[in-house]
Length: 322
Picture (cartoon, one colour):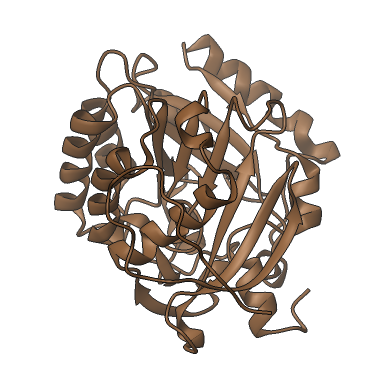
């Protein structure tokens, strides 16, 4: 049954000029609920995913997470992500805002009461390829009327988008000082492996270090280097230590999420397995060098739900996908 987003906006900001056709909802309210929707009626190329989620350690009133798609599929084609299965372009500002509005409408009045409301531009798509992401970030504070609003962006750091990243810094400084989470999704310290896992032209780690150091200001959360650790994929803590300032940059180690694409490419996680002890020495080396290291395993129920990027749309398009 197709459901249309209803009108129930807390602020006086104009509503998005887009109705979502909700095609499915999977998951559970105490972990995450994943929606598949069309933004353009009857057009399957406009299928997206977005998530009404939370940190399972806290009630939603304390911490609430909304994950948005920024593109129809993704052009990067990471070897471990189902979102790159197909790609049909960028979402408009209205299509981005419609996802936010739909989730807000499910919890009337909560945005203004929530202790920490995080909007992640972190579902289908590479955010830095879409200029409308920046425009949406600028609109969100007035639209959501949430005093504890955070904006969160993960990126593979493509080349050719330098102007986008400079503008991102300006938006952060104006609207989200001290309430912004920037993640560089590197996944390996080996440049050849990085190019294989994320097959687009990427900025090198020296560029990432220079930008990350400039991005961080007093009171900000440190930008994060994220490594989704996979078997037989290199991770050398000295490559991090030699380039990055631990006073300005943090490190996060996560499992490689189980996806159809990752399985097809023979990729499997280290964390969550008996091999995870192998990283203990790496963590100690980084800690000794002064780095904050977060080991983010997450809730296993998210994998049972299938709430990883691109899975829900891919399954709807291809019922045979595992």
